[in-house]
Image 1 (cartoon, rainbow, N blue to C red):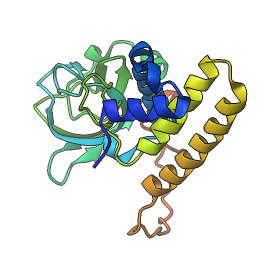
Image 2: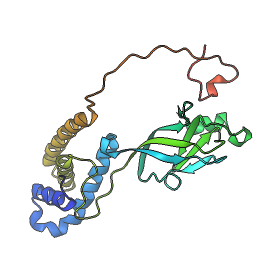
Image 3: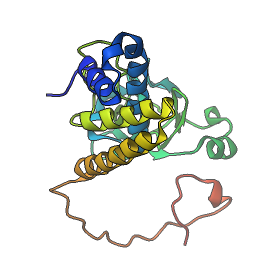
Image 4: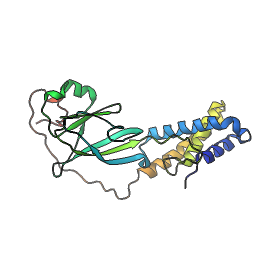
Length: 234
């Protein structure tokens, strides 16, 4: 069971020697806590923040979709993969950089609609090419930012990192007070805790790597280097 926001704040203030004057520091301490939580999420895609959406769909002849409005993906950190589900013809869609897409296909509407092969992300929008010809189900792997601490009984979305949040917030508090000696000591402890938490989060006990068979690329013609769906050439 994780600690609540107010329990974390109390521990941080006690470590800083500021609990006796808590009413003057609670608001600032909550801000430190949120900043540290965001910084922690920025460094690693934590398992507790990973999601799989299997209800997203495309619409006939629609090119652009809102992640939040059309597919209900909120507080998105990263899109990790998108699969188009169509029975035995299901496929993983290929990510295409916006500049490459704009150079290669500046006007996708000039092409016939068909089964989508790739996608472009731009802000909250996802753009498909080719434009889908019918409704397809999408399976989307995505990670999100942790929910900002706003309620007294709220817990961190990332399990079992309360010690990390406390240590890093104490380091932040000492640095704000220009006590760099204690700030560095607590920052070192926070980094030690982070590395242990990272190792635990990345461990996959059932993972066993296997070699992949060699596959050669297909033929090519024209400006093949602009085609984002071509991985190799003969």
